[in-house]
View 1 (tube, rainbow, N blue to C red):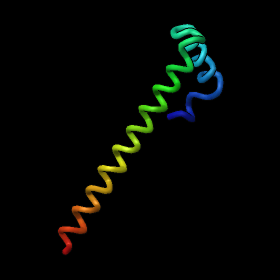
View 2 (cartoon, rainbow, N blue to C red; view 1 turned 180 degrees about the horizontal axis):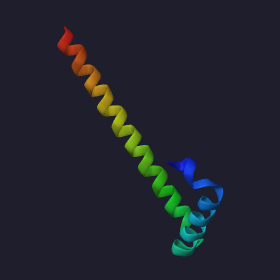
View 3 (tube, rainbow, N blue to C red; view 1 turned 30 degrees about the vertical axis):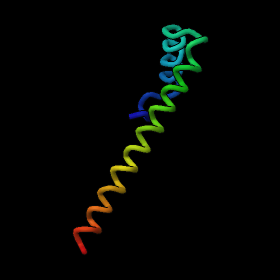
View 4 (cartoon, rainbow, N blue to C red; view 1 turned 60 degrees about the horizontal axis):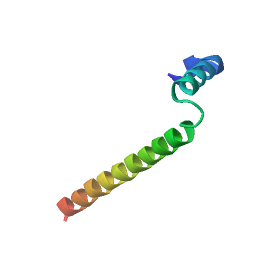
Length: 60
């Protein structure tokens, strides 16, 4: 999907985001998106480890 956008499309998207949020809000926006992605990764790791533990317990 990202291959079809290309560099010009990404530049247009970034300009629109800059216009919508302004330069002062972009660091806060980026930080919150990064924290959300980190929390999502941690949650999925916890779920995967719980499932693996359950599978090990069922085999015993």
